[in-house]
Amino acid sequence: MVRWIDAMVPSCAALSRDDVIWAFSFVVGAVYSWQLIDHRYDTMLNVVAERSAHEVTSDIVAFCCKGIEAICERRAAQRATDEPPLRIAVSA
Image (cartoon, rainbow, N blue to C red; front, side):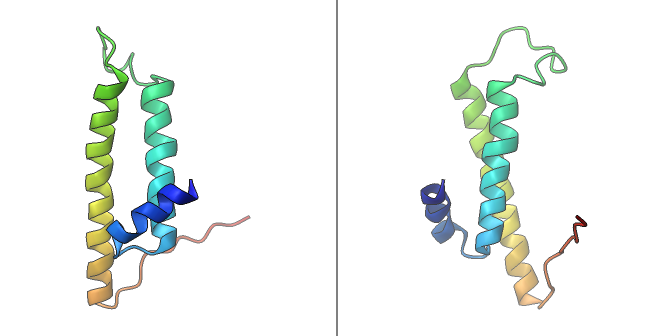
């Protein structure tokens, strides 16, 4: 995993390493497993014919790339205005 995260860093110069790790974990953990492995939404989507893993993966990659680009743009804008990123405190 570290190798893949390291590969993302040069493409996401506006993001901190923490942001890159979060983006990676979101893409791989939440989207990939729920859509490709569990088929959790098939009944809600009224799926008649099962989509291939390739079709789903293509959509996931396109969706996630745009999401990561949006985070990059947001972080760059925050730096330009010296606005700190939103931090949410988590209680133990």
